[in-house]
Image (cartoon, rainbow, N blue to C red; front, side):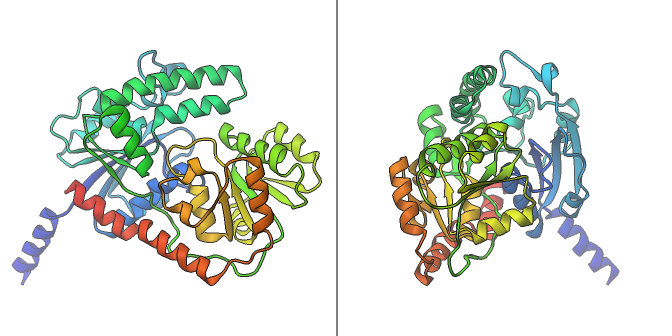
Length: 387
């Protein structure tokens, strides 16, 4: 019996699937959009028996004990910030994330490697991982993302930085595209990589989310909501646009909620007594705001990737109004109201503000969302690609 038990244990060990995951940031706590896909992918892969060797670039979040529940081992590396991480030939997001110890740890075995974001691909770019099975998770078409950040930036120096970074990223992404299997978060990004960089090995896998059930509240709310990290230029631009161009005349209350709003946003809000600003709400407060709003109003001026805030709104809120560039080709256009200028936003808000969400609305959302955002099924697909 002991021999049989020992053989069974050895057989299981030989059949264990091990995976290196290299993260651009520490993927916990899950308190901003960029880490949702990272964290919930890790938890689902763990649930399906994958032995995860996690590597994190840390620049302020610190070591997180919660991650020990899901990972076989965890390594933390300091990101080289400021001048130490600067390069005139490589994008800063890449050159600031290199570590000789990371390379040593990745070369210690023959396990496959999932690089989370273009940010973590320095050693792939340098061809330092020979013989490794390599996958790159694309969170955006990065050069386009930075180009659009430049358009939203109000600071001249930031605008120059974003444009310079965008140019470096475009050259970098083009050179990188033949070197690994790429896995994008949206079909738009797949098409862009195929067209822009002639990528031949690129796949689509939806983001991993904490939401498993559609939780749209019955009845009607008495306000509209815009939410997001307000310290990010594109979110400040969207909030400013709503204040100046949409809710400037509408007799409908708007709440703007998010992290670190600027003085500019505060001043604009103070000029309209129908608009209220909630700075730095807790996670619980934000969830309550989203679920109780009559309409989540979420224009975006950056069309790459997929916005977690929209997914949060359609899983947990009532009506959701967005613009075309954000949802085109995602199937989310089937369950959101789409508007593209201030007048169409005003008409849509006026129309939906007195309209209860129906059982038919919830049924359609369930059909669309469960078809796309199924963590278990998507993790199985990822496992199949890797092994």
